[in-house]
Length: 513
Image (tube, rainbow, N blue to C red; front, side):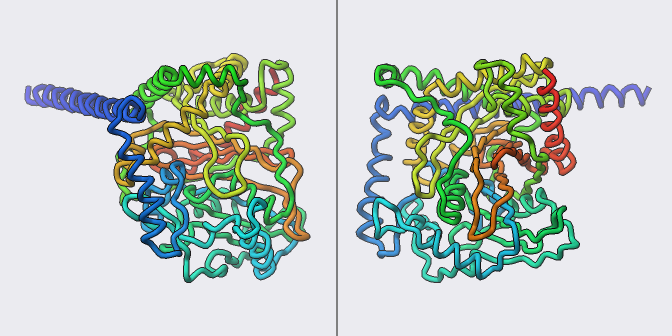
């Protein structure tokens, strides 16, 4: 009798607990929908005149107070894009927005030799448009807050020795690239110093017994995007023009289409962004969804997995089987989508909302972010590899032709005019379970001095409010590597390793179609 009552009480307690959890989720989703919907209408500044003071205030701070009332050490203000990535204290807590790249140089390059080449080719590089203007002033500056906005300020204590180091590495000790990337992603940046550094691993272990040097470069996203970093190392350090294998991802339109899009922009903007917000809100309870309202002080760690080198020719051959109906970019998307579906039944039950980063054409020669972001629902529920591939191609084509560059520019421009504390709150309410960045790397290869580069790999943090699990694809010559990054609370080391292996397996499946 007593045990029966106890059992019923437990059932009631469990039901009540589940009901409260569902109610909390519902309230939370409504809060997010209200916040994001409010932001959509706020961004339409031409419809809401009271938004104008934000723009006026930013202009006054940048062009009057910062220019005339501060010392000459003040540099330029961070752009709206870069300001979003800077909304974290990366000197006290694990950075969410780090960009890591490693490249392998043939031969043994000494620390002083590398510093000398870097100083001459990078730090002293000048813009062709201005013989007196340094190409990368941010490398010798740090970020400061001033009247609600972020600026670059000259570092009076700058020394190249503080940014380029050497780590003793015994050749008998195997160095795992995934661990190198993981440790770098979780490492803090030094206060009052430009957020970048380069580490040399000499005597890097290799299979053929020849001398090699592994170069690890770490940048915060607020100083540069992946294309900026690629240009820095290939065009400045390597002294050759960057040649990418893939065409631009954003379609160019004729004058008539551009004019029509401009006139129709208000309606298009709302209809493009509202579905994105709804899908983002609906994804809050996905198992890979990162925690929103994350405070800077909340500790977390990234875990990283790397695929084996994948053949670009294999991906192109898969695309060629279907003629113009499929591109190699959609093959890559299908590989990632299929791998996600293999990670558990829960991940196959519904499509996954994904933030997809597209590089914009004509990247400037300076540091900074020059990209746009769109949202797609990855077809993880599709069991047929061929149908999944066609769905990914359709998604990719629609995203390129959707005016995403214009919408993204406008949204970020508006968000960047806000003062730091307000922008920080809004940015953290954007959430996606998955993020994908596709980086078209150097197609021909490059050298640093007499040392030829044989491999180039990128990884990235899971970003502020962007993704719980992120995929960073980077090509070099005829190979592709995909880095899988996740917050440790979402996937552990075994999980990211399994996911990386599944991506390679998906390519083998697609090759049999």
